[in-house]
Length: 268
Image (cartoon, rainbow, N blue to C red; front, side, top):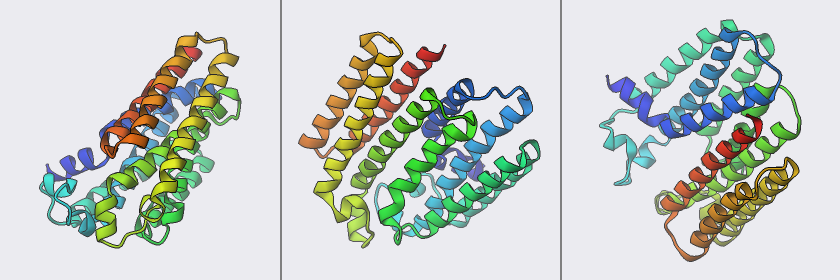
């Protein structure tokens, strides 16, 4: 039971739900996948890879996170990091089993992505300058992995995925800033706090511009652009005026979910 609870909570279920929606949309805008078993395998492989990546990250961060009163592992009653490692191995065993439904190219890509996530988690303190780029790039690549084609729709989705996830990764660094500094761990927020704020704003504005251009080009109602504009404006205002990074992170998640929903309405 503890392993199931560990897998469920540490895999970030909200993020997985958003990822599933991204995968679904990507399958609609790309080359059609007529084999239902293959499509299901792709869905599950991506979800399991994401969940496993979160688990292995928590495994290597176990000691540092447990020095904080807000430690999610302690709140879950996980006092031995081997529980996380075993949960990670279980997910990867299921992941490997599903490879039988995939073609060779996808299998190679999935293996490489899992290796990258493992090495990233293991060397996160040394790769702080690449951390946000790696996570954002892999998130954007999920769209191409499923769609298997580059067109205006997939490029738009990949661009917004990269921008919003890069912004959110910086915000997450600010959320953990005190704990990171007390443990001597470098992140963009810890190393360049002022520049990181501005960079977050730049990526949010870039996402807004891309969204407005896309919605206008495809003749969508002005309301679509207005919604993204309002959410972006509120988020930027909070970044400038407050230190409530958990709320800012939530706002970016809402922007991601809203943007996906509006995009979905353009392809229905």
